[in-house]
Length: 180
Ligand SMILES: [Zn+2]
Image 1 (spheres, helix red, strand yellow):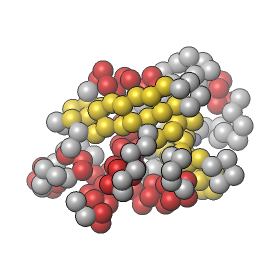
Image 2 (cartoon, rainbow, N blue to C red):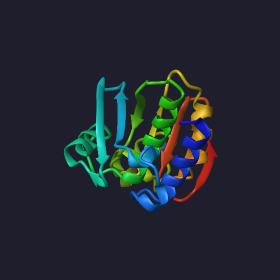
Image 3 (cartoon, rainbow, N blue to C red):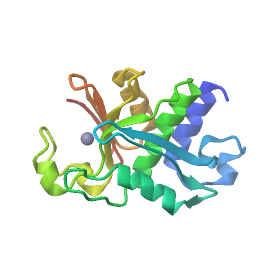
């Protein structure tokens, strides 16, 4: 698929994440293919490669693996992560794969309990992390600024670019961007 067509498909998919064959058309469309995420969590050395959505349905046992990797490690708590958040990550990862980068998304943080959030330096009081809607991380082979730019293009929610600490925040809340 041409990169431009892929990007347009990704953008269309986030507006209408549920499979709509009459709109999405061809079987080659990104969002009609199984949605896979490959995540790595350096702090715990866990890797998950899971297809969490296929044929219009969430695949629960695979989705659960992702939710567990994205847990609050300090509190030992996992929650149901927002599917839109996972879709944003899948869009980013699909874009990377289309550009020949097969790295997992290096994950710093997913869900945070209120207590953990309170103890997290620089965390917003009402952080989307507390609702299972946010992800922080990076991809070592790619500049975090490029990732942030693509995440903004997706229009899936909030995008924060933390230049000094070199990570990206994405969430499925309202559209907004910031630099930390
Ligand atoms: Zn964050």
